[in-house]
Image (tube, rainbow, N blue to C red):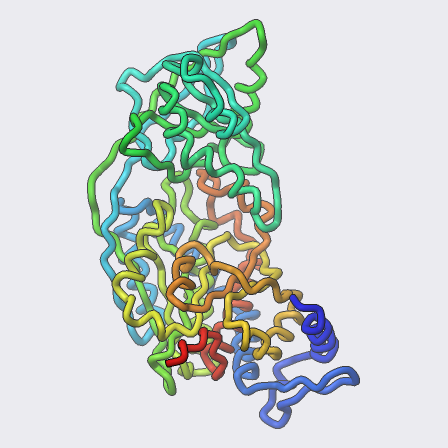
Length: 481
């Protein structure tokens, strides 16, 4: 943030510290103090009404509860995924959306199957293991080999093929805890690329320390990739507690020998769907405010945090806006994307299917980082107008939410939209404990704090309502003719 603008924001914060719904009456359209006069727009008045209604509502939590209890796990292309699509269509209808439709998305279905890992030497131990998403199976009887440990995928790349051939590679990289989840990107390459790098050196299989910040016996799954030019080998993740056990067995005197049996399989092509609900704009129906989450989840837990919370937050925010202030001026479009977990498949299909209409999107955003409280809003708006909605920024600051950078990608499923000229924003959530549960059997409804998801719902209602009721347009200016 540029320093002069930050000073203005601090002044705005001082001036609106006591904003209430009464202060939003039609008679008061300015808030004044000794430091700055703050224009108080009709759009913000409407948005604050939606926010106040949201602060008394448990709708987002109720939606997540419905999804996790009535559907549960929903890996792309599975029977659970099909139930989730039907659930989403019915839920949009129950919430009274004006327009409900679905877009087909072709996905490759994969089934996890049985997984087991046993240390044979130097000390017999059973390890908690899960197959990584997309992994091939071991032979039916399993495989047994010496284990070589590397502290990073870069260290593996420097190894000699003669040492690695016919052995099992163990990538043992710890992930640090961080509110923004910045260390996920440092470690996730082990999961995504580990099998290819190990196979290049002749390994029989690869196992990784789970990509997570917990110290538990829950293994973290997640997508991995193969290279058509490299032999496909089985890939699994062991829990962080079991990674500690395995690490402790490596001494100069002893070889570590592991037996792995994983029976994952490719179940072929299936059709999933992006499920979409809209409240059609009354004044500018062709101008779209797009908020989103992804409907699919991994199959170990019930996908409450990833991304049931996001589903509940964006559906509830849109419903509360309509319920509180009536028909929005711009169309509010809620997209529940298919197959995010296996490579943003639904998001890419949405762009392909709607490429001629992307210019109508005023902004896009996604909730996909659990339900921790929002502390910052990042944007990617046209620079010339980025500071225009100062009353919105001030209202967010009053909630303890700072304005961050103007370079965000908006979230996984909307990350490809800026290249098409679509503005995006990101409402940054506290992810301090998110990666304790991410992609594990422990991702369940009880991990969601009601106060936290209600705060998310209220922030999304405020921002979405403001953008749907205002004339603010953060799209880049069209090129000069």
